Image 1 (spheres, rainbow, N blue to C red):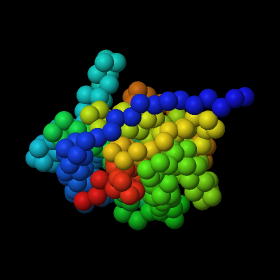
Image 2: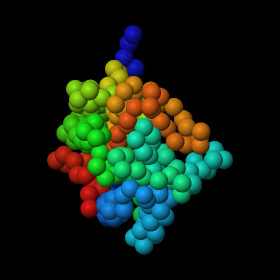
Image 3: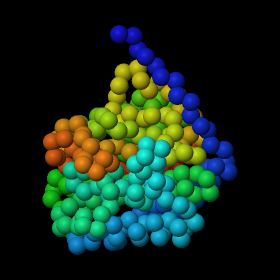
Image 4: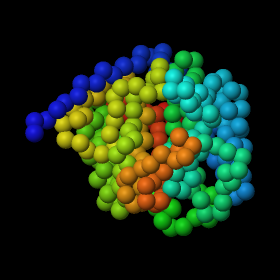
Length: 263
């Protein structure tokens, strides 16, 4: 089969847009850091969601996720995606969803700040966790950095995809195929669609300074297959295995990259 290259039109951000994203992302990282201090056994996920919305509004932003997908008639109802253990992404915060000792809890959130979007995810240990759970958090984070090393001006997205997949599989986990990293800026999801695994001929996109991406390797301890839960939003591992997630909004600079979502 001949290679099929998909040409993706990517927005290059100007200096003003970059500065707005830089400021908004820093605030988002500060918010997630504060949320992490509240990740404890006995806390319900709705409490953390309400705190997140309060912090975002106090920082001068508005929640990026709340109301997302309204055109479908079933908008996302919360400020954070609250995903526990085998829940991959898009978990809905609930009062009766109580964090338990030994859980891993993934907080995915973002905000609209002066017209530009931010997006990031962190995985937190709830009390003492097993070695397997420690490893999946570590590998999800490591996969982000393994991929980031390949992001640079005049590089190709396929190099990112190869690096993430190689790192994850070397450590005994699988990469979720049905979810991707993505461009970000004036919209939460922009081109390009960025695979976290290599697909021959798909990502022949040459990278340029001024591009901004939300890089988010999503990995499973077992099969990469996922299913949609009963609430219509939460995605779960098909085999019930653990899932890990780590995400940052990044900027491609003239010399390399800058992680914007750091406090």
